[in-house]
Image 1 (tube, rainbow, N blue to C red):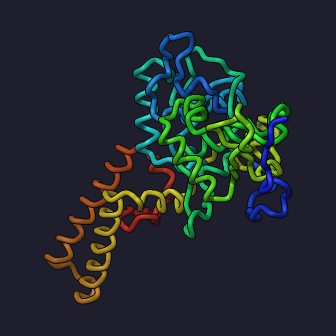
Image 2: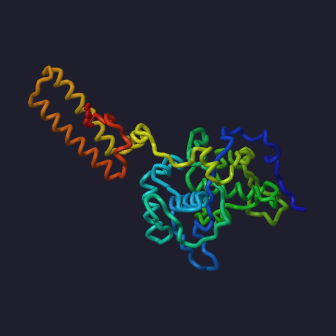
Length: 328
């Protein structure tokens, strides 16, 4: 029998404890989305970047849950998967242009490209925004790390592996259609986060030469995966809901253009109040000028919200200092 050294893999108590949720929804990431060629035929998913692949996986998962094209807004993807609006927009554009998805109606898409649906990797949704301690710093995992971790978690769970997966950076990279260097960097980072361990096979194990033995942190398997259905999604707060005015405002402040408009509105309001107090309520050229500026700022804000397809009705009257309040 080949010698297999597994000293580090013995007990769960030797692993660093992780702060994880008791339950988590997950997405199915069909391996076909990585674009691996089959029988020397180029895949329709070839050369898609990882952002596109993950957006596809989200569409696949939620359409499976709803049994129809699900409503997937930019806000929903930003909130639950930590994606930027620019990333989501670029992914939808690329996938549509390549005839991989079809827009049914606003925020609803179906995948029209053919692919194998039952060969997938499960990616826990909390992984997307969780900050792991890596080399003394809190950090989120990138898409290549998430995919590699999901693949190793599935591989180690295979009954044939007895919890220990024998592979290499090159093999993992090939399986996920990642460059070998990217696969290597991914493995090193999730190892630094304490999510996996690796060991070299025994010296006399010729069959495993050039490979490593991988084991995934046992706590990751203890996070319960409720079934993919609407009831469980509601329980985990993963059903789309409109953000509040405060939530949307906080998100938009990350945009330079919006932040600039809001700052100018605030300055205009402060100056207008000052002038009104100084003039004891009487009109003056300065006040009239500031009132006109206020009108222009209101129009600029309205145009910004329109361009970004953000409902003006989301913000109640008086939310912005340029709003016209009808007291009648």
